[in-house]
Figure 1 (tube, one colour):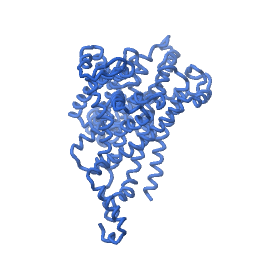
Figure 2 (cartoon, one colour):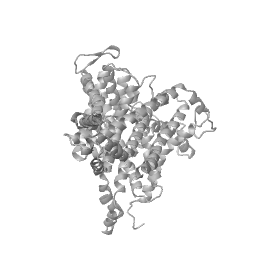
Figure 3 (cartoon, chains in turn yellow, blue):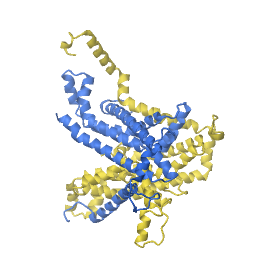
Figure 4 (cartoon, chains in turn cyan, orange):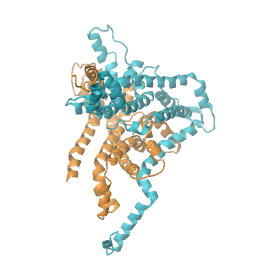
Amino acid sequence: MASESVPESASKSYTAGLKEQLMENRRVRFLVSPGSGLFWILLFLVAPLTIIVAFSFFKPGEAGSIVYELTLANYREFVSSSVYHTVIWDSIKIGIITTLIVLPLGYTLGYFLGRTESRWTPVLLGLVVVQFWVPLIIRTYAWITVLGRNGVINKFLTAIGVIGEPVQLLYTTNGMILGLVVSILPFMVLPVYSAVSTIEEDVIQAAKTLGASDARAFFEVTLPLSWPGVVSGILFTFILSAGSFVAPALLGGPEDRLIAPVIATIFTNDFNWPFAAALSLVYILFLAVLLYLFTRKADLEEALEGTQI
Amino acid sequence: MSGSSRWNWPAVKGASLLIYLSMLLPLAVVVINSFNAARIPSFPPSEYSLRWYGAFLQDETFMSAIWNSLKVGIAAAVLSGAIGTATAMGFVRKQFPFKKSLAIAMLTPMLVPPVIIGVSSTILFVQIGWDRSILWLVVMHTLVALPYAFLVIRSRLYLFDESLEDAAMTLGADRLTTFREVTFPIVAPSILTAMVLSFVISFGEFTASQFWVDRTTTTVPVVIYSMVRTLITPKVNVLATLVLVVTTAIPILGIVVQRFVLSNAQSQ
C-alpha cells in the first residue's frame, strides 16, 4: 500500500500479496471467522440430530441390529404406551418442582451477594463459582455419603433425638430433588447476583424516601430490576433438572424414571437405538416448543449469557 | 438499619448460610473420608490414614482414566479456544445474514440434554464406521465447551476498541501483524479464561461421555460413576478429592496468571 514497499524483493511482496489475497477471499475469511464454530455445530450436533430423525423411523432387529425399513412403530409405541407418557410427565414435574425450590433459594443467595457489604464478598462469590468447576458427578456422589442410613444427616438427627431410627433419604424422590436443587442453585444465584449488584443504592433509597416500606421497595424496585437474571435462572433450572441424568441415577429411587436415564437405558441395555432415537426426538420437540414460547417473552441469547460474570 | 436498601436482612443471611452449608458440607465429607482408614467409611472417621491414597496410586484403572481425562481436556481446551476465538471475532466484526439466529445456533449445545448429544452422536459415528477412540471425546467435548468459550471471548471483544487496529494498519502493519501485535494481546486474557473453562467442562463431563468411552479411553467421571454404581471403594473418595483439587486449582491458577502475568505484559 505504501510506495516505499515497491523496491523490496519481489518474492517477499509476492508472498505478502498471496497472504493478502487469501485474507480477502470471502470463503476463506468466512471459515476463519464465524464459519469454524458453526461448522463444528453442524458436523457434531446438527448432523447427529438429523441422523436420529432417520433412525426413529427404522425397525429394531434382533440383538441390537437395525432393520432399515421405514416404519412408524417407534412413534406408535410412544403414543400407545402410557409408561412413556408418565416418563415425560414425571420429568416435567420434577423440572417444575426443582425450579419452584431453586427460585426462592437461589434468589435469596444472589440477593445476599448482590447487596452485602461484607469484605468477604469475593470469597463468598468464589465459593459459588467453584460449584461450576467441580464436576457434577462428584457433587452428586458427595450426597450419597451424607444421605445414607449411616450418613451425616441421619447420625445428626438420631443424636439430637429428632428421630429414633435412621430414615430412608437416599434412593428416594426427595433425596434426588435435594441433590438436583443444590447442584443447580449456582445457575440461579449468579445471574440474580449480576442483576441485583448493578441496582444502584440510590434507586432503592428513592423509593423509600417516597414512603415505600422495605418490602414494597423490594417488590416494586429490586425484584423487577433483577428480573432478567431470574428469567435466565429459571430457563437453566428447568432444562437441567427435567433433563437430568446423574441425580436420578445416583440419588433417586426405582420409581424415579426420568427421560434422560430412560433414553440411556433403552440405548445401552436394550440396544433399541431406533426407539431411543424416537424418544430423544419427542423430548427435543417438547424443548423446542418450550424455547419458542420462551423467546416470545424473553431474549434467549441474553438468558444463555446469564451465568457468565 | 433504617437507611438500608435491604429487605429482611437477618432472614436472608440465615438462609444464605444454610445454602452455603448444603453446597459445601457434602464435599467436605468426601474430602475428610478420603483420609478415613476404615474399609466401610463411617463419619466422622475413627482413624485417619493415607492408606487409600497409597492403594489409589497402585490402581491402573484410575491412573489411565486420569491420563485420558487430561489428554482430552487439554485437546478440547486448545480446540475450543481456537475455534471460539475465530467464531467470536467473526460474530463481532462481520455482518452476515441470520446473525442473531446463528448466534443462538452457536449456543445450542447448552440447551440439548447431554444424554441426547451422547446418543445421537454415537449413532452417527457408528453408522459412518468411525470406531470409538479418544478422538470421539476430543471432538465432542470441544462441541460441549464451545458455547462457553464463544460467550467469554465475544463479551471481551465487544469492549475492544477497533480504532487500535485501524491505527496499527495505518502505521503499515498487515492484517496478521495487527492481529498478532494488537488484537491478540488484548483478547488473550479472555482466550485463557475460555480455555480454562473448556478444560474444566471437559474434565467433568459425564452424562454424554458415558456413551463415547470404551475400556481404554474411559475418563475420570465415568470411572467414578461405575465405581459408585457397583462397588463403593474408599478409593473413590481419594479420586473425588483429587478431582476437586484439580478442578478448583486450575481455574484459580488461570485467574492468577491473567491478573498478574498478562496484565503486566500488557502494561509494558
